[in-house]
Length: 557
Ligand SMILES: [Zn+2]
View 1 (tube, rainbow, N blue to C red):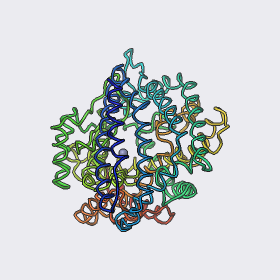
View 2 (view 1 turned 120 degrees about the vertical axis):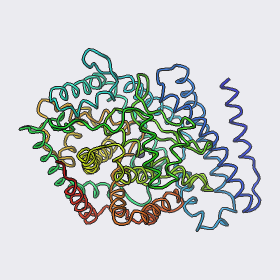
View 3 (view 1 turned 180 degrees about the vertical axis):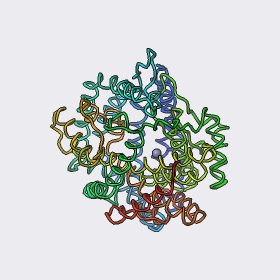
View 4 (view 1 turned 45 degrees about the vertical axis):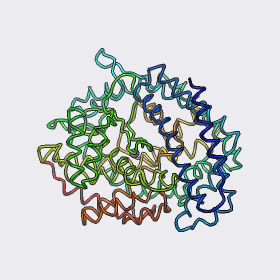
């Protein structure tokens, strides 16, 4: 069965390889044909991936997914490279105007320079290791009041007003992953070794360099990342510390422990925007339609076509994502509802991605529909903030509404320092490949102290502080992908600031920027949205001033 599929797959690509290109018009139609084949094959693989995430304990589904990874994906990459070479060697490439095709040509050259046959085998090994990571973490369960529960189910308890319950929940969260520490640490060892080899094979000086090229990060450098970490340290930490101190006072504690960070004060009930996935979908559709009718109908379309899987269950992978199904022309949203305010925020976030997929759907070049995370996350994080003004659909009292908004702005601020820790940690991991596990965890603790300074008292739980990254799947699955969250959050806050001043114009520019896909350099996409791609201390200081003022307006009685 699978062998047959593989043959068909090869045939389809061989057809593309043998296309004769004799004019610039031929080249253009070849690119269209190529896009069709890519999108069809991509969607097949994505559907297998989604099925695996939805049901990672099914052997049949797992086999299908693994077959793709071991056989189809490497072949796909190989053909991609062959076809890129074909285009690069075509004398007609130069005739494609730079105004329209400039970004495409730049990416094509970068990607081609990066491709190494020898790396295909390494990437297979990488995938297998990443699968191991997901099997281990996806299979983790916690013991909660004598019952076996999923890890996601624990999160609701961190908001509990009862401190003991919070503490127990945190123990239940860390115990199972720390029991797997040795295995997870050694998976990372192997990944680091493979990845450094990959960079060497491509003739590059280090894995960061390799990934910056791979992600087409043409507009900032690893040095800029450190600059950003320092700017955030300088201007975000003071606000973050102030917010933590206020929270500590609100919950009336003398000491502030890791399990207190999300606690709801005694006189308040935890926020719960919805009870069910159906409610979440319907109410969100209404809110999004008010921002723009197109956004609202997208929710209905996706719902009709069963493109939401939002509830948590055993055997389903953790986390949330939105994957575009290019052939269907619609995305799929995956989530694990936790019955906390997070449900609303995550859903709006993923809908931002979905809207992005919709707006760039008709771009002519396959390459331009592939977007960098710095614009993908800008789309999603802005949507969290834009929808805030209509959260009264989910929260019925002003007190709850203001709390939810305040928490949203707070979490935007509080997340920035941690993002920089994960980013700087990854730079360190690959720059010092011979480190020991002890050095690794110690380094993480140090980076936390420097870039994520807090009033938390970790005494007696240093392990949690130094090993919390074991739950950060990005380190395993998508190395160096994390800083995008900070860059985009800063962009989203700028957009929110514009939105407060001029909502209609801001939504219109947002749509315009998203519809560009990656046809323009990142700074131009940000500019189209009416904001700046800027890591400077000055911009961050100004934004923090704006957020502090917004927070002051949200009084909670
Ligand atoms: Zn996202």
